[in-house]
Image (cartoon, rainbow, N blue to C red; front, side):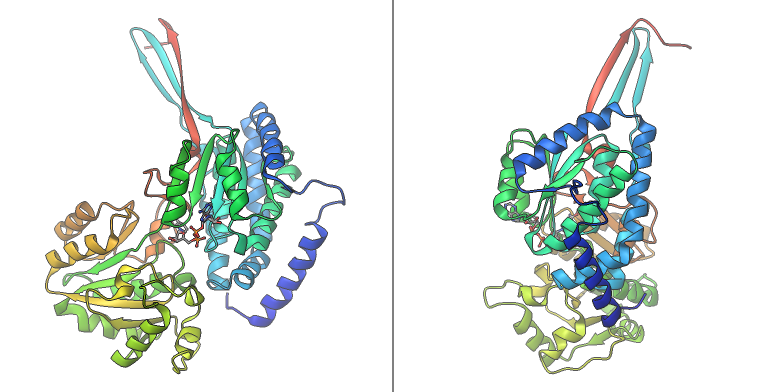
Length: 465
Ligand code: NAD
C-alpha cells in the first residue's frame, strides 16, 4: 500500500472526528479512558476479577474480537500514528498492525506443566498476575498496544496503559478501539484502561501504584532503569543498536537487498532495524554496489556524509530528534540534496568511531564500516551492540562464522540471511512481539511472559501408568 498524503489527510480527519465523539459508543458509555490513575487501576481491578471468572472460550472470543477490530481500523490508526508522531511510514505502520493483530499468540501460549511419579502428581500452571501497568513508546504507539493487550489479556490480566504523551491521540484511540472490541465480545469494561492525558507524572503514579502487580516498559534505557528500581516485578524492553555483519561467504546481492529493506522499514524506527553495516573488506565494494542497485539506497559522497552527520548528530554526540523517523528525502533536503520518491535509505562509508555507528539513530541513514576479516567483524559487532542484548544480524554461508558471532554477541534476537523484521515474525517463523525484553531476559514476550507460576500437588494419586 502506497503512502498518499490526500488519503491520509482524509482518513485522519474522520478518525479525529470519531475520537472526539468517542469511538462508535453511545453517549455515556465507558470507553476505557478515565481522568486519574487511581480510577484506571480501580476499573482494571474489577475487570480482571470478572475476566478470571469467565471461561477460557470467552477469553478467546475477546481476543478474536480485538484482532478483528484492529484490522478493521488499521488504515485510519496507521495514518493517525504518522500524522501525530511524525515518525515512520504509513504503509509500514499498516504492516506492523497486521503483524501484531495476527501473530501475537493468544491463550494457546499458556502451557501447563504436569509431572507424575511415585508420590503423585504436580501441576504447574501459568496464572494471571492481576493488574499490569504498561508504558508504551512513541515509535510503535499502535503495535505495542495491540501486542500488549492481546498477550496480557490472554494470560488473564487487565492492563492500565500509560502511553508516550506525544502519541496520546493515537494510543488512546487504539485503546478505545480495543476496549470496545472487548465489550462487544461480552468482556468486562475496564480490562484495558488509561488516563485521557498521559504524562510523565501519570507514568510515575502508575509505577508507584500499590495495586499494580507488574510493570512492563517498552522504551529507552533510562525509563527501563526507572522501572527496574521500582521494587516491583518489572519487564524491561529497551533500546538496541543492531549491527549487521556481512562476511566474504555471504550471498552479497541477497544481503544487500535484505539490509536495504530491513534498515528502511518504518524509516528505521523499529528497535530491531539494522543500525550499522559491518562488512569484510573483500566484499565491501560489491555489497555497496548491490545496495545501490536495489534502486532504494542512495550512496552519500564523503562531503554529503559529513554534512548529514553534522545535521543529525549534535556536538555533544546526541541524535537530533527532529530527524528521527523521517523519510530520507526530508533529511537529505536539509543538506540541499533532492532525492526521488523511490529512495528509502542513505548509505555511506564510515570509520569505526563514527557517531552513527555507536548511536541508535532511528532514521534511514546507514553507516557502513569495513573490517579486515570476519574475526575483526565479530569483535567490532559485539562492541557496537554495547551489551544491549537486543538484536544482531549476519549474512554468511559459513556455519562456523555464524555460530561464532551469535555466541559472542549474546543478543535476544539473532537473524541470519534475512532482513531484521524476519526476526519479529514478518517473513520469518515464530510469533511476533513489540515488547522484546532484553534487559530483563524474557525475550520475545507473549501471554506466558505475563503470568506467575502456581504449583498444585496431589499426593499419591493420578499417576495412571
Ligand atoms: P522513551 O524511553 O522516551 O519512552 C518510553 C515510554 O516511557 C513512554 O511512555 C514515556 O512516556 C515513558 N517514560 C520515559 N521516561 C520516563 C520516566 N523518566 N519516567 C516515567 N516514564 C517515562 O522511548 P520512546 O522514544 O518512546 O521509544 C523509542 C525507544 O524505545 C528506542 O530506544 C527503542 O529502541 C525502544 N524500543 C524498544 C522496544 C523493545 O521491544 N525492546 C520496542 C520499541 C521501542
